[in-house]
Picture 1: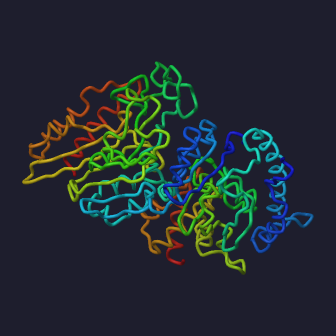
Picture 2 (picture 1 turned 135 degrees about the vertical axis):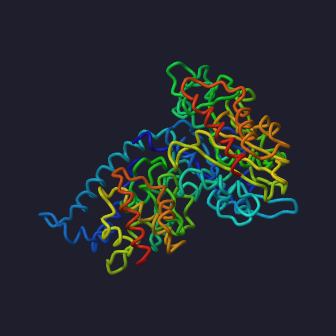
Length: 227
Length: 329
């Protein structure tokens, strides 16, 4: 049973490579054998995911019997992610964060708490923020999903918000940054010139364990001037 | 990792209420009704609730809007908390509810969390949420009400074996506004006063609301009785976002020539149900709005409280919130 269900889709390899090209890390961070650090780490994640997926399916063998249920959702669905429609095989109980990270290779969306308590997995559904860890993928089939990977321009230029976060030295460790940026994007779409208090409210659903909140708010205010 | 993977279930996405009801009836206690999902998915990930079928109501469009009616407004149960917070009709007539909705959890949760889900959510007592076999979970003990129990967040009033509290911020507002909850099942429709919608452990220790398997909360009606009254809502929690209220207060007052002619007040976080403060209402009705009345109201609010080891602080907290509600609305 586990052989025909891939948690890590090998077909996404090429998608991953496409993703790597043009990112700053890939251009500058090439290792000795020509692979970037990020591609190497992703390879490790992929290998791990395959193993743990097998383990999970094994553990679930009793309850995920592949008996088609009348009227229940189809597993093969199309998702509109970052402007591209992608076909993907999604379990009924799968969260959007799992689909994005482990099926579509979009690992920019982070999984922190997996309990909608940290904000690292924040993505946009039709320009509205949500926690991808607590959203069933099947409930967003009709939405335009935007992740951090969908922000940069086709030529690789960073989105003005991303650039503002760099210029203001917003992130410290960087783990919560994709979520903070997605919340900022949603804020600036609904209110292009927010006050600092409005920015605080808009980012209040994103934790930063480094405590770089003030730097993030500086970044938002800079982006509001430029975006 | 395994703990974070949900058990398998069949997911149904009906597009009309009739289909949803027949699915809900068909699966009974093996089914689970999903709205925004922010509470449901935690239960599934912790493997404490393992439904065979999940019925996602989010595709039923008729349940997600705010309508003006002849004698008030109707809110579909799937309306998100952000929508309620920002809705101009609600702001204009019942700003109390708008404020309460804006204080729930975090922006992301409000964006997809629904008013129906917010009032129907289960208690947050961590012993219960952890999956222990407490009274509420069908067992025969309470882990919070023990000498070692961590019960700082638990109840002051009407404990009956279970000492859990109502976690909702919008529920006290709905009680203060005399809202009606429309509950639908396959046999028909029923309107239940918000105050009677919530039930304590004395009535049924395993449920927080009157909803039984097969029932769906579809609509919340708010009559014009309190439209444009003087409102006060305040939530006190350990953190400004995400956190559930230690105590929250919602009140609606009608004042004429500085005399309180009519008042309705409800308090969350102090009892298993949002507590309607009828004693306070009776004490202040007809009195001038001044410091003396506020003090009188505060003293009467906590009458009968039986604090647990670690939640004595909730008594002055509740009294002060009542005082502010009278003084500052």
